[in-house]
Length: 423
Image (cartoon, rainbow, N blue to C red; front, side, top):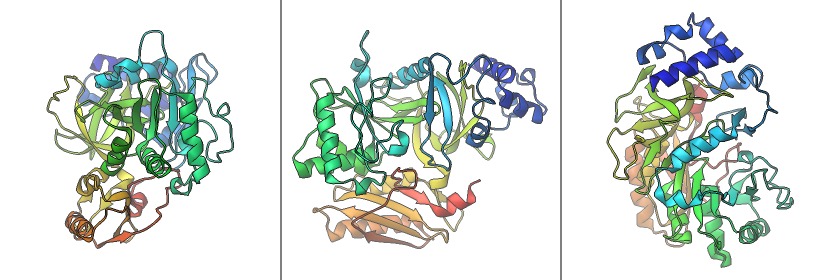
């Protein structure tokens, strides 16, 4: 594996202006990197590097944005300004196939000679067309690969009924094999479906891939209840600029793609041990267009180290969340969005929640209850959250509306304090 890393370093140094400058600024050349220990001498690269140098500084010599098989993407802006990027279509497909390969329930999607019909229901900033207004046609929102992007308001809970009905109608007309969704958005559609007496069906076997934000247990419970056990649902680990970084196996465990990428989990500049949380650094392998070396994703995971009963060789990880979303406690500890979600659980009495830490460190947990909510449910959750978030002050509030982030994503856990402190 490390021979492939060294080849990627040499290629990036020789073919991209940015990475050559990055290495030379640190008095390094490819031949200096002979081992995994040497590799750590290369300072991590980041979104800001690729934002400033796109496209000329990061595209490999011989490529332009108009070269064959080049696909352009724009991130949603979760961590700040939106990031423009590009990827070769066959690299995207290869990474997707490796990741989905951990879950045999998705095998039938990729029959030889066929292409699955895909509908996307996600925040408008995550789409490659204008879909927030709802007034565009299906043809206007069909991407070159045939994917139909469904309409939804930029602020999810502000989506009007007529736009929800339109989404159901278009799914029925399009007859997809695959729904690619933000799980919070699909849970929203599920609640409306029950209210309107609508279902999501297709003559083909329907599959669901969830991405974009953390798939909370609350959202998953609603989606599973609405679609039923026969519909495979898989949680995808991914980034717009890199594609599929991992996927959920049929046993419900998340696996990271260490075949198409060289992966590191790093804290304070050093690799973490299994069972410890670290930031994911990605190095692409055989990426001819935009090679990335030690790319700091901003996403944190805990590598678990043990093998999974699903049979895959891809390592198992626990998703923790982004650094800017982690709650900072007065005693120096951090609480991750993954930990918050574990404490909340699937909460059958709740439709939606958001934990927000303000710049003073105080935490407010807002939730939208459903008709099954009881006082005992709220009291028990308050106790668990107090234990999790102490010594910081925290409170729990029942509300009727919770706003999305500026990016259009609905984040279940945000920290204004962490966002201010994270460079």
